[in-house]
Length: 107
Image 1: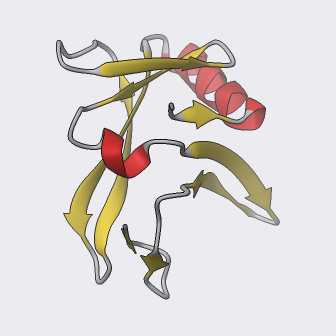
Image 2 (image 1 turned 135 degrees about the vertical axis):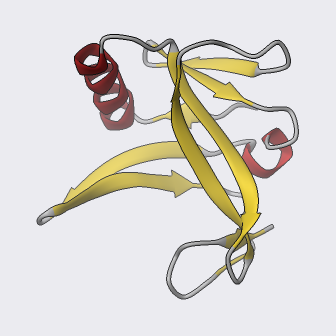
């Protein structure tokens, strides 16, 4: 399987990297945090790490560390705007439970 971006998310990432003037893609991972156990990490990647697993989605490179991949496999990252709010949404089929505030999840 893979970790993918929706067209909207890929367009947002590509435009931001263009404005930023550097970057090879988006690094996605998980960390231990919150009341449900895990939280997502997102950052722009300027270099690939030797152990990164790379996917390409709508022309944007997605880099995942091997420890995060089992928690993220099959996930689609979307970008949504609702009123004045905008942000990334994780459509992760592995999530079994999430905290009420939406900050963390459990698999």
